[in-house]
Length: 269
Ligand SMILES: NC(=O)C1=CN([C@@H]2O[C@H](COP(=O)(O)OP(=O)(O)OC[C@H]3O[C@@H](n4cnc5c(N)ncnc54)[C@H](O)[C@@H]3O)[C@@H](O)[C@H]2O)C=CC1
Ligand SMILES: O=C(O)C1=N[C@H](C(=O)O)C[C@H](O)C1
Image 1 (cartoon, protein in one colour):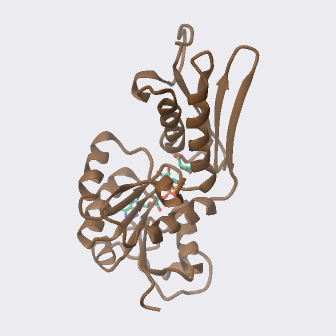
Image 2 (image 1 turned 180 degrees about the horizontal axis):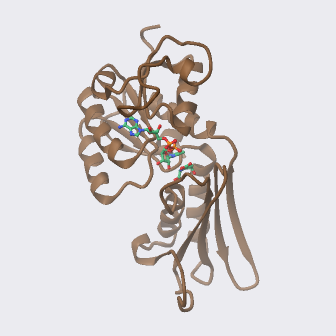
């Protein structure tokens, strides 16, 4: 069915790349037209189905991102900041929807994504699951309802291979809490406590990160007052929740005007 949007997966052999490849292959709403890996990766040149340990699917993994993306209607990208910024330029040239799950992007990276979004649809979120995006909205509401007598702490836990901290999700939750309180996150965030830190600053939003084993992704937002605590929690047990959200975003983005969007736009939350 040539009319279904053609999707390219960046970082196809990664933890998320495999989930995404599987998800698009299973979908009756999209076609998998490209799987990209970095030059020299052992999967390059192999059939992606076989590389994943299953039957052949007739699509070979490539390291030629330029040619793959030129044919795409959407590119799904859960890789690393430098790869994502380079991919944004290719997706913009192809006018393809760029769905970005990559976290750990810096201010300079974000500027370059904004530039790409002048020409194409860019959907970016530190977490693409329905549950976390709902939690973002709940966090904003609870933070707006409580004053600074309630201390806000965001605690996240991930697998031992994760390279960035705090997680992209923790930052989304911290941002929502700050917006609920009507303050700038940059003014109140408190990261990486160690040593004699002094008492907690009133109004601070604290972040803590746990890394270990195969934890998929867990996030708590704690509102700690005198004599009571409210805990909002999301636990991901299967990366398929992120892949489902990313595919939904790739399909939603077809026909949207160029610009920057997030999963709240996609999910209508
Ligand atoms: N927004 C969300 O819902 C989620 C975001 N993430 C984020 O996605 C990113 C990737 O996470 P994982 O899959 O766990 O990492 P991973 O390390 O398993 O996968 C990254 C893949 O990108 C590939 N890659 C590196 N350079 C490349 C290049 N030039 N071209 C093509 N591929 C290249 C690597 O070889 C690797 O296979 C991280 O930033 C993570 O935080 C992860 C899960 C959910
Ligand atoms: O690296 C991961 O694995 C995850 N990264 C995202 C994040 O940084 O929040 C989303 C999810 O929690 C898994």
